[in-house]
Length: 139
Image (cartoon, rainbow, N blue to C red; front, side, top):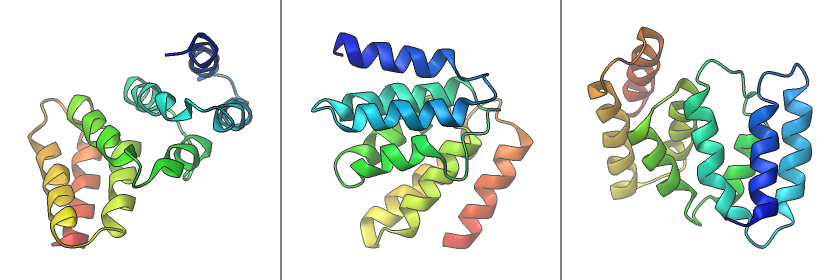
């Protein structure tokens, strides 16, 4: 990853507990959006969500708005990888948004990814309930 892009991700990570985190996230994602290597920040942003499952990232929030600009450009695969590493309420919610816009085999695959989260060790009851809620919407 480019040094400047890495600096922006570190700044984002260091601001996660600030009360003005949303403002910082908007500023940083706006700066990243103009870069030719912007997609390289998707995985680190998802890892930030994985490592901070109790943070309110917004509804959907600046980070989701940003990573969703890569919808059908590789974002879905990065999200699935993230969910297989460490699912969180926010990333499960993001998966549900993708399922809502999917059809046929892709939708089946993504629903299976959702259901597989229930096999993940040590997930919270809140996450189990959210997964089951979304599963029920799609089956």
